[in-house]
Amino acid sequence: MANRIQLQPSGHDFESKEGENILESALEHGVAFPYGCQNGFCGACKAKVVSGDYEYQDEYKPQPLTEDELADGMVICCKAEAKSDLTVAVEVVKGAEEIKVHNMPTKVVKIEKLADDVVRLYLKTPEDESMQFLAGQYIEILMEDKRRAFSIANAPHNNEEIELHIRLVEGGYFTPHVFNEMTEKEILRIEGPLGGFYLREDSRNDIVMIAGGTGFAPIKGIIEHAIELGKKNMIHLYWGVRGQKDIYLRELAEQWVAEHENIKFVPVLSNADEGWEGRSGYVHEAVFEDFYDLSGRDVYVAGPPVMVNACREACTKRKLPEKRFYSDSFEIAGATEGK
Image (cartoon, rainbow, N blue to C red; front, side, top):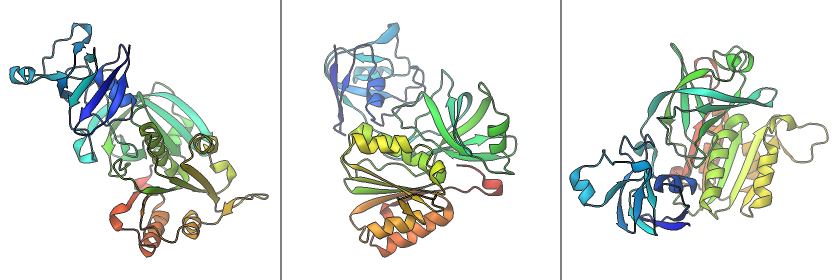
């Protein structure tokens, strides 16, 4: 039997299936519910049950709560299961500054080649420690004396693993190892989540998303999160690459378009293949051929610094307020190899 859970003051309303705890149900529906360990130890997911009945799973005892908190109706949501419709008071996460940055080991569980020079890496966090993040943020992989930044490509509701898209940088310090030597079960230490590039969930503006190369990674996470939230804003995705083979998840983007009326996808090739009938040139030029006035939209840009800077300048000329330009610049040279 399923029960409804309503959150105050955010107004989120979602279904909780039998056997799910409150936190699991919230995350499954794309809600940025605060949490930490997900094992009932840290207390980060505590919230107040305003009305309704619940039970703790596995004979759990809420040790992180004080006597005053217990008397006030506070519960540990990663261990509490709804036994009726519930109203829960909790402040959902609204910004990156509200999320704890973790330093933890992760295990490589899958390496998948997406293109000649792009692999998809899946990292598993420890069983007793998880990492909350916002769609579009990034992590840093820590080595002896260096660190490399890579955007998280999955959405928060699908957080069992961390998905990264890694492009080979010849002569780089880390990416040649990924392509030539890395094996499953290798341990990588990471720090994250980091960055202010994430979906602004409260905005009702139509969205223009511009990705350059593996800048598609954080854009993918943001779009999947928007879909999970049921957002109806128009989303115009422009993905700039060199040739057709570099559109390494084209089928996924086309699936979004087929399944959601509010999503449009335009691939743009800077070095168009013979016979290519789509858009060609620089991706930002294609965008600004289609949009002259951006005053009522939000713009998200992820990719090489030159592209990001060109987009910023062009957006200013097209009446986009600076506060609605969100960017993630992918530095890939020398000491900043990554993303």
